[in-house]
Amino acid sequence: MHATSASAPSTTDRLLDVTEKFLADKGIRATTMIDVAQAAGVSRAWLYRIFPDKPTLVGAVLMRLIETSWAQARAELSTLAGFEDRLVAGVQIGRRTYDDPGTLLMRLRTAEPEEFTACAGAGVRGLVPDLAAFWYPFVAAAADDGDIHPDTELAEASEWIARVMISFGSVPGHHFNADDPAAVRRHVRRYVLPALRQAPTPATPEETR
Image (cartoon, rainbow, N blue to C red; front, side):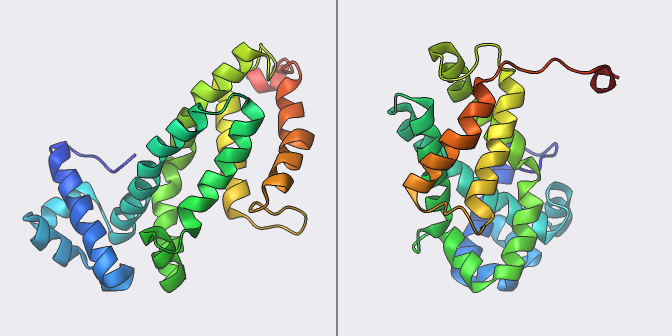
């Protein structure tokens, strides 16, 4: 997920740790690449080899904060029996990641919305495949349990679920309230689950080219 290079993972992790501390103490605007390099004990040239610019660096930190919550989310979802319940809970967990006033993510998004959006955009490039991988075992279990069609293309469906979750959690609308569990469940029952319970449509000749 994070930007990589030939450097040891510990160096990258140290850079992310230092950046996260600066973000917590100073915010996005006041955090500079020079500060990070000096505090991490690396040269600016080395920092730029790993993270080519500040949005990429800050974006990696934002994504790491999100990913840290995924381990907890995985454990939480694993306690639920049905795929419907897991989807509904997944939306609430995603919303909670951003909406807890005490979290660094929420403070940065509220205090520096433009900078947050720019940096989150840089970090989110790898979010869909990572979130798809997160959902894959739950989609596979749903197919095994009969909650969705057994012939569902699991990797493709997992990526679609990832995109749906991102939309639910981050794109407001006039007819859907992601903060209302009953509304989320109704939406899941009407649109998400029916799509996954149908037999997959065979690829057309145009799609196989």
